[in-house]
Length: 245
Picture (cartoon, rainbow, N blue to C red):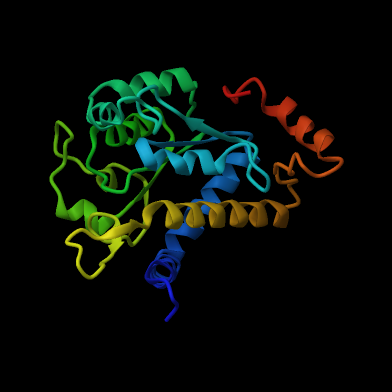
């Protein structure tokens, strides 16, 4: 046991997630490698704090170049008032507009992150992605999702409408640390676990590509000497499709 309860709980949940999700992680990594080898893109979506995973995966040192985040106006953490974001992720019809703007194709892969898996935009994002021929991966807390009612018009949860589902093994309510004298748990785990799982997928997909003799498209740190030429080469290759460039 460490001095910090959050550290101990995080280690436990991380270990559980990696040990129980090995098979699906391997499947997703293979899908990612196939998409990259076929010159497709990996789109990532999450609303509110779930969107931090999209930020983690794109345009960063050691990250895959062909990753495109989907940041919907009103669905990001700097929306003001912040309570508006909570309402907007329950809105039907928005996901289709976002996918239209992202210019997704059937050759691409879509990762949708929602810890609760209950809100309409995330669920419709997965539905819309599949209807457009994309392989759709859901990242969610199965325990939390099973404990709450869906806000989707047809009662679906995110885990019901994805091709592959990764369980982040988080507790109901996300906050995991119980402190004596406080009735409310503290210390959410979904962002840390989600980022670890997504980085593991990036590493594994690069390993798979390299094993086939395919040069993996990976960003080098912009703060290392000589990185500009490598990064520019990859950005030039993907520029017409990565809408954030």
